[in-house]
Image 1 (cartoon, rainbow, N blue to C red):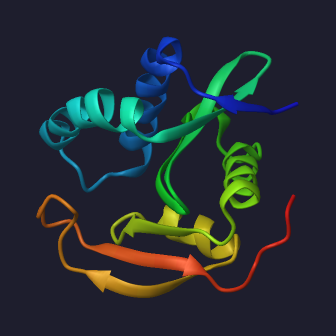
Image 2: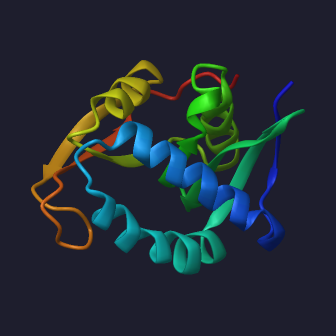
Length: 150
């Protein structure tokens, strides 16, 4: 059974570990130096400042979603728990709280794009660089229709 609850500062070390494991498993276009340069931003800015919800299974915290209003800033799942419904549950929770969602996805991460498209999102635009100006193109997604609450 997946439990979703707000993240606390106590949860941040585990959430950072989830982020690291997930990024290393899914973002093959990033070098280890890229990952290490992003780590302080996630640790010191994103986790403390965004609205963060986490998914727990009996064994551990396994995923989280970070939101700014109805925009998904981040959704990461521990690779050991891929395809167990955690990402889907977090999206449903965010949608229930915020309504129709938007999200930006790295173009070089086809599994993330496929996940969001399978959950009712479509590409509405593209940027050649990420928000920091790095050469990692972003696809801007929005929900095609109000998706059913799960």
